[in-house]
Amino acid sequence: MVPGEDVRKKIASFIDHTLLSPDATENDIKKLCEEAKKFGFAAVCINPSFVKLAAERLKGSGVKVCTVVGFPLGATHKEVKSYEAAKAIEEGADEIDMVANIGALKGKNFRLVYEDVRGVIEASKDKVVKVILEMGSLEKDEKIAGCVLTKAAGASYVKTSTGLGKGGATVEDVALIRKIVGTGMGIKAAGGIRNLETAYSFIKAGATRLGTSSGVNIVKESQKAG
Image (cartoon, rainbow, N blue to C red; front, side):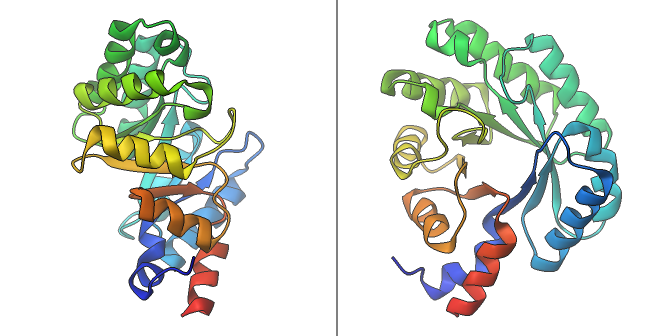
């Protein structure tokens, strides 16, 4: 499948340039930010301790600072997630990728799932909140419930996975999410997106953002394709 010229030209604007490794250093984050500015990525996605650094490096560039909350398990108290989100916004984050409470979702404790997401949204004020549902750990009915709850809570995006769980993004999951949430929400596909063809398949299925650590290679591949 060969991406159309319009997608190739704007592929960078779909990408959250991601570095969530526990051993990432300040120099690694500085390099990530410079690459994001050079290639025009939508955002960098980093761990919370680097938000302030990234915000300083990206100021005025148009590249957003995205960080994670409740990462990677989603099993912390909802009050802790809300505090983590508020702290990240205070330090300069533009977007929050929170991990939903997957155990609560599988256990059909839908009130907790909703309150968990809603608390982070309220703590994040008017910022973009993406909710990670770790689709590889869910049955189809659980995926549907998670999408419905996420939309009801007022999230900006559903995100497919942390990239560290059971499998990454799938085209089928992205298509299912789009069918459930409609056209008004964003979808972020993450996990296993390493080349232009894969990136394009997710965009075609309905993804509006791609979380990947291979953004530079994808953009270079798109430039060669052009």
